[in-house]
Amino acid sequence: MKEIKVLLEDLRSADWWVRDDAIRGLLQHPEERYLAFLEEALKNHENANLRNASMECYVKLGVRSFSSLGRLILNEDHEVRLFAANMLGDIGDRKASPYLMGAMKDPDGNVRMAAAEALGKIGDPEAAGVLEASLEDDPWVAMAAIKALGEIGGDGALMVLYKCLEKEDYRGITFDAIERAGNENAIRYLTPFVDTDEMKELALRAVVNIADRRRLKLRPEYFINMVPLVLELQHSADPEVKKAAFIALSWAEDLRGLPFLIKALDDEELQEYALSGILAIGERAIPEIIEALRDTGRPHRNILAKLLSMSGEYASLLRFFDDDDPEVRVEVALALGKIGSAKTAEILSRMLDDPDEEVRTAARKISRTAER
Image: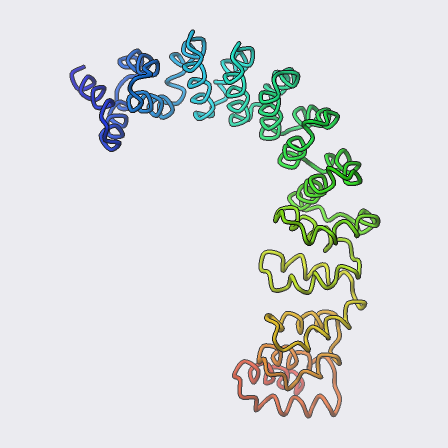
């Protein structure tokens, strides 16, 4: 007990390192020997260091602290109840759910909001019903409950969130929650809102991000009437909305989106979507790819050359055999193996003496293949 008394005294220190060492020391002892001290420390509004240290110790104790936190979440002091709810959420064990679901009826709105947030952190599906009941509560509590439902996920939570779409004041945060938890079925509930002026950006972002996360490439037909919108959103100030709109554009297979797709080849984050979208447009994209490849000042021109090759446009690619970019010339050399003529034989001969080693290597590879 003497050692524990020293450690408890160190919790009062102004030095964070001393307090941290004390917490780690206390964890090595049976918690029943000092939980009463931590309870009193949590109620101490005069010594912030001591109170914060007690909270850190509670969280690190985990489920070992639940007997004490179960009492504290019923304490007469609303701040103590608030701290208890936060700590139960930070511990993150489902055994805390009964305490927190009970706290959803607390007389203090801040405690109810903290309990909802904590239930979201824990992710217990059993809490969906209690959270649904709080949707008629104070707006801040209701919004915390909606966010928590998105973190919990699953069919039960999603069904509650679909109902929340009927609440106009909460649609924005509901879109966020469904986007986080949604599955393929959620897209059906969100789609009608893509046509509404006020919510179209958030709805589209949610639809696309759900589909992308679930590896569901939406069919081009889905975007028939949305292309003007996704083109407009390429200029959105919100980077998340802009990215989602770009992904939609890559799935739409619409020629109007081609300039944006070609430009995005220079963006590593969007490059995969851009490649897929351009290839899906097919031969209609070839003239613009060639035009872009002619621009010797643009970066990643080798990707444009590769696109021509992937599209089977080998003859179009041959016109760039003396391009200044060796990476483009490599793609030309590799394309020579796909067509045979006196002209290609002449180009291959010149590329075998190219000043760039990678170009010569590609040309030798094609030359050996042709000799077999």
